[in-house]
Image (tube, rainbow, N blue to C red; front, side, top):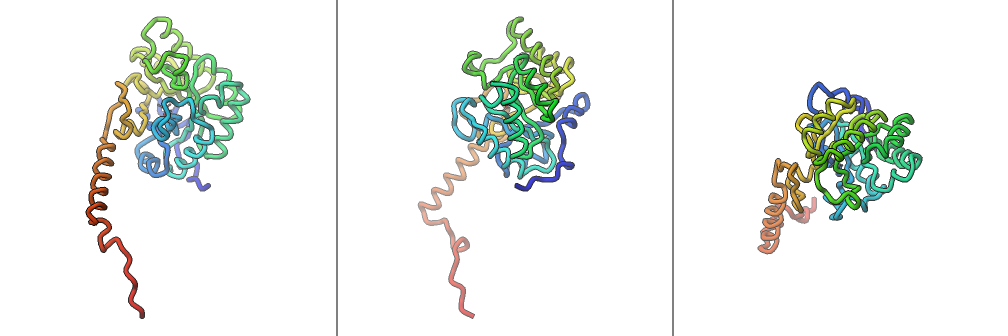
Amino acid sequence: MSTPPRQKRLTPADITALKGNRPIVSLTAYTTPIARILDRHCDLLLVGDSLGMVLYGMDTTVGVTMDMMVAHGQAVMRGVSRACVIVDLPFGAYQESKEQAFRNAVRLMKETGCDGVKLEGGAEMAETVAFLVSRGVPVFGHIGLMPQQVNTSGGYRSKGHSEAEQDKIRRDAKAIDEAGAFAMVIEGTVEPLAREITTTVKAATIGIGASPACDGQILVSDDMLGLFNEFKPRFVKHYSELAEVIEKAAEGYAAEVKERVFPGQEHTFQIRPKK
Ligand code: KIV
């Protein structure tokens, strides 16, 4: 595996240091060619377990495996020269014990060359976060709406609409901040709370369906590109309509094949004249 030199890329500490300076730009990436393009524009690329849904057609992220995360982490690392790259620990790879979390985090870092791992959870994961950080694993937290908990949390609805839910998210943010997370995703959380958390934690907050006041923003790249159109959550903005572009290209190709327009002479090989 050949990965670009470490010193050229942003570190998790660089990401935290951007807090209070300028907004942190992040997107998800899963493949080498897309990582190559996004790298020029992003501070942080997340190899998110959302790949289960956007690349593999799964209904949720629950079925994503460590092997999938390793393969896509390696692919993304082949395409970056600037961005900090974080790989998601998938469901079931860290909740059992802090030792299991460490083993799998180390596997992701060793086999992909990524800069750290992301895990979902608040107060209940704080001990694990502290265990990883104290042993050399940078941790990107994830609070608010946690897609890996979709089966116990009542679906993909936004969080923080009651006082009790707000208190829980506040406690979650404080717990993983004190445990040493360098940054945390705040997903699907009412705006004033995401704004408040950003002012109270040391970690950089990266919002998705949260607040423009977060220290940075992230979107699933296939959502942002208009490629994944199964559903469009309120917080998604399309910066392109790639699904339509691909549809048109496929339509044009199919028509030309049927009409024997493609391949043209210029796409074929003729026998070279003997010298
Ligand atoms: O898996 C993922 O892509 C994520 C982002 C949506 C933050 O967790």
